[in-house]
Every structure is written in C-alpha cells, then in structure tokens.
Figure (tube, rainbow, N blue to C red):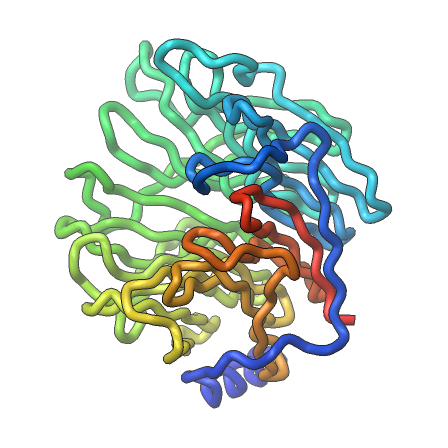
Length: 378
C-alpha cells in the first residue's frame, strides 16, 4: 500500500514548484580535520570537505583534500560529532610527474558502517575498495581478460549484505557492470543493448538493494543513455522513461534502487531540459519536472529512501547549486546551506538521505571551499 500511495502522490506533483525552506530546520556544518580552508580562485579543482553518503545510524562518509589538493583522504563522521580519517594503505600519498591526484575516495556506506569506493595509487591505477567498520581495507579489480592488464575499477554502492556494485573498464575502453559478493566473488554483466564503441560506452551499475537487485545505465550504439534494472536472478530489464531523449549522450540515468523496488534517476529531453523520474515495481514511471529550472542547466536525482522521499540537486540561471527534498507526503522544498555561495559552481549539493529523513551533503562557499553538512527538518 505504501508504494501505491507514493505513486499517487508523485503523479499529482508531476510538475512542481519549489517552496521556501521549512521554519524548523537544523544545519550541522563540519569540516574534516586537515581539510583545505584557503580561499581559491575557482571551484576547479574542488578544495575542502566532500560528503558521499549517510547510513541509518547517522554515520557520514566522505573525502577531503588539503591545500595542495593532491591527495584525497577518507573520513567517517559519527553521530556524536567525532571524526576519523581512514585511508587505504594501497592509495597514493604523493603525486608524480604524470599523475596529479591520488588517494582514497568513498562513495557509499551501509548500515553496518562498511564503506566502498575508489582508490588511486601513485602509478595512477584506479581500483575499488571495501572498508570494514574497523578500518580494514580490501582492494579489488574487475575481471581481467588480459593477464597484464588490471582493469580500472569503480565501486559506487554497497548493501547491508556487503555486496557492492559499480563498473570496470576492460581493455581497451569497454565499460562493464559488476556485483561483488561479501566473499569476494565478482559477477560481471552487460545490458543487452549496450555498445562498446566510442569514448563513453558500455554499462555502469549505480546502486544495489538488500536483495541484490541493481540499477544503472548503459550507452547504446548511438551513444544514447538508457536506464536498466538487473534483478538478483540475473534478469535485466531495460525500461523507457517518457520524454527521455535518444540523442547522443542524452537520455535517462538510473541512480538509486530501494528494497521496495523503487528506482529513481534523472533524464534529459531532446532540448537537454532536465527532469527526474521514479519507476515503480509494476513498471510504471512517473516523471518530476521543475519549470523554474532553466533549460540546459544540470539537475540530478541523487537518492530515494525506503519510504519514497526523493532527494536531488539542481542548478539555477547563475549555475549555482540548490538541494531539494520531495517528501513522501507531497511536501517539496529547497535546502540551501546558510553560507553557501551563489556564484557559478557554488551552492548546496545533496548527496544522500536516510529513512529518518536526515540529509547529508556539502556546500561550496563564496571562497570556493566545500564544507560538509547534516540537515534535519526539526
């Protein structure tokens, strides 16, 4: 019944107007120890503290860099405010003449405190890792088709069973999706219509739920992007999003899947106007549009929790970022950090929310320095 309620709510709110922020809200701003704080002339490369995920216990994972912006390091923030820096021993600690950024970058954190992400060593090799709650790291690569080539591998999501998912590049440039079980077994897969030609190609998995169902996107022979759902039995469902473009490098990106089978993501139409969507277990798709977002500006649906609250980020006419939260009861509002900058590539970016409705993300201030935040409505 809950899925049906959420479906009816979003259908009624297919075209949405962003409201003022709620009066009862709380921002907790934090910086990782040692994070860059020196004002920068631009947001590229980004300096400071970047948040990636929050779990059900309120633990937050992210990465930061120092003023030299050469080494990325992982941090864990606990609900009591304690922060721990934890880096993969295999990651690079210094740059070389041909690789200018190394280190450890987490992307996801499960409810047991196990994290996953990407490391880059001093040779520039990219690998995926799993970090236990005790701080122990295990590194891995996708399957190798050539004995001398270790595929560049990324891990984007982890479920509460310890399964992780992401993609890897087989020689020379073919992207494949994979699932790695907690025992280290790796199963690779490709969407049936994925193409392996061109610079940006193949299959990327972005999220995995507790049953082992995965969502993601792939590129077809024309470089158009399509969303897919891979069930835990291996069946892959290619689904269409109404209004999504079939032009090269446009189309629909699936970003999250819940234990209830809700899949959310975003898409671009033929005019490259962005919108969001939610796909329901019965196959129906509801689209979410914001008419006040200018054409051509970026728009992301970053997460949906198990209750159906949808989180995302959009960019205004000045190219400044704003977070938004569409709650299961139909309420919609902006989330702007008090000290977020308002110029191009500054602003507030929402990365994830848990089932309690707590939002974690980061904002970029007027000095082009990023800071982590935890937002609650009450």
